[in-house]
Image (tube, rainbow, N blue to C red; front, top):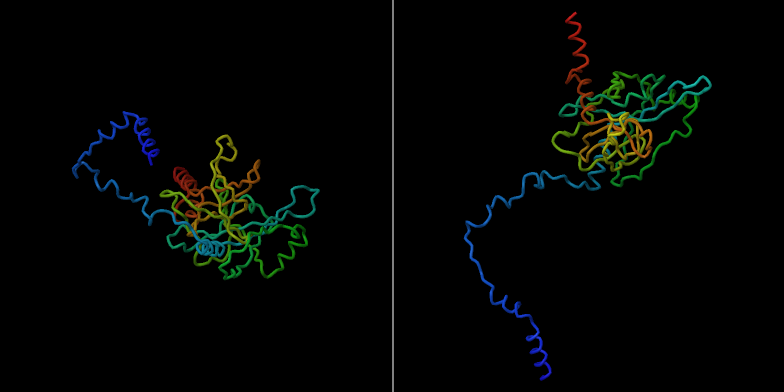
Length: 300
């Protein structure tokens, strides 16, 4: 016990005098309510309110998005002429087209695909719609290849197959690399996300050639790549007409082709160019080029 007292005494003697004085100098300052911040400053800003913040999609949201997106897509097979006189068999390419509409209710859609792979095609075939499986379990991603579909005999099989319909190209806009395909029009297609008000937080690629959606990103474009400056870039690997859509199944962009030097990236047609093309096809807008031609004709 005596040893404990000595220890306490030594601790008190060794404690800095300045620290002991600081305890004696503590004061309490009283404030008035008027000195407090305005209560409105602590209110959550509108932009951060739960109703306006992006919702994290769950499995059911993604499944519904995939079913909606996939139902608006059509698998496309294109037969192209051989690029060389030494080449005997035609070139066969497989991609997709998607029904898009700029109307508020997504009515009267047009079937859109990149122009570069259907322009000048010998024949174009689209697959008839198939019922999607009603399962809550999303299937694993599987890419359909062209294995077994690269000869003249195989394209004849497609031509005689009742599951495929031969179609024609409608309008072509080479400047935007977009084309329409003439086909029986469904009641609804996919609408567009208004990218002027917000940017897509969650984005998914949906393809007629892959059995599941895949989360995707739109990447920053290298300003040094002047040859492809029109396009945006994405890490979604499926090219030739696969849409990038939000969890609410609104279209943001359309894949066109693989990056010429970085095959892991895909070049995508920007949102405004895609929507403007669809608006022209639906008669909601007039092409500036057509307007200029009409004005020149009137001047003459």
